[in-house]
Length: 296
Ligand SMILES: [Fe+2]
Ligand SMILES: [Fe+2]
Image: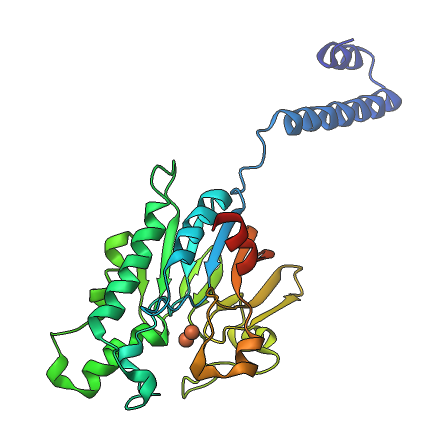
């Protein structure tokens, strides 16, 4: 009997048991109705997890061919990241180095050669992205090597107006450009060439770099600069997770100024963070050798 008819019949011969049975029936009907509404509701509209591809310090240097940037473009085509982060030190800018100025290793360095080579690296990278059916977000966080340009104009005001970081044409290639030490944020992750350890703005470093990033940043932080790899994860009391990550570098050559022990410590390769959602994702390393073998 339909519920309404059941109720009419109850009104004609009311009884306590009859009312109780009717209330039970109403409860059961409401329960079934709720289940049906839930079943017909559209799928949850939570955003699709995203993929970030992070390029560690790549140090484009006129003494070293730019082939790795061609391979990098091919890798981006393959991975199809939503976000590509160039973490800085894309341009080595050896001509503005104060470290080995006046030494034999400095011979032949020229500002325009450095700049042209770094632009060429972006050209060959972007050439590989031609015809890509979507546009990834491109983020460049300026490194201390690009920042040498600003430093040079600060220290020698006569250069003001003659050289600038605009010479590197980063924006012209469609990259968001974030000044040195200014983090960029994507899907809840903070990206910066390096993060400051304190008020003196010295880089966070040491054996436990990744956990220090979490301790000092209070959120997921990803950086370059050290050329080493380190990864730490922690869980907040609400169950959400955060990661600290130092992504290593993306070049194959020997960094003579760093010495053999430091060169041996470098992680050479690319880092991909998959399933990024609310500042957390699954970290994957792709070594320089794997990239070279596959795309070189
Ligand atoms: Fe670097
Ligand atoms: Fe750096």
